[in-house]
Amino acid sequence: MSQTFPQSPGTVPVPGLWVTVLGAAALAAVLTDEETRPRWLGIDLQHGEIAESGLPDLLRCAELHATPVLVRTADHNPAAIGRALDLGARGVVVPAVESAAQAQAVVAATRFAPEGVRSDGYRRNRTARAPGPLDDLPDPLVLPMVETAAGLDAAAGILGVDGVSGVFVGPIDLARSSGWRPDGPELLAAVAGLSVRTRNSGRLLAMFALSAEHAATLPPLDLVALGTDLGLLGTAVARTFGGAR
Image (cartoon, rainbow, N blue to C red):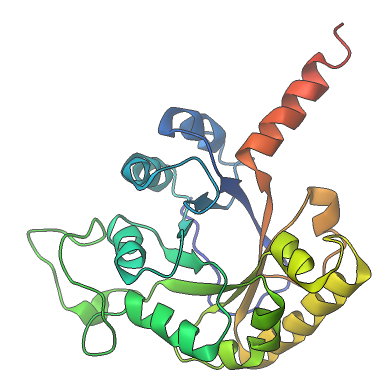
């Protein structure tokens, strides 16, 4: 069954997996069971060990298993944003956006002329034989990251930018920037405020959760990453072998 990202705020967050180290073969094992696999993937090119050269195989694997993908780019580079979308990502998560002007530049990197600056060339989501009009292509999800105190202060302006689908909260960096604990009450209050803003503006709210238990304590979200591939692998190994000594 093919999965898609929500286009407007919902009532139940869609759970996903943050991919930092897995290759295509291991990812295929994760996605094989339709009943238990994550509903979406976030592929991390900023902090993960995955290089851009590894994206094509990962995106093909996800497509084969009908699992949509967001790619977190390493920075705001328009070429890197366009490249991730060309290879088949359904949307981009762009780190450390701290102003409406930066959000506008990110949106422009996802849009073709005359609305934006994205170059139109080879794309896996368009056949070479019959390209079709650009108007037929769905707009990608554009999720600037709110992960600094400055970004949180600018959230209203960021959410007001045409073409921004919502915001993605990076709790660890936001907590560091603000002098909070990642699981502390101040961060929860900030996320609650963002939840109200996104719902009032018809935008999405996404966040990386520290664990499934942490996710259960969070204010209403639309997308939630329930952990990293590496972290979940370590947890599974500990549970399996912890009592075998």
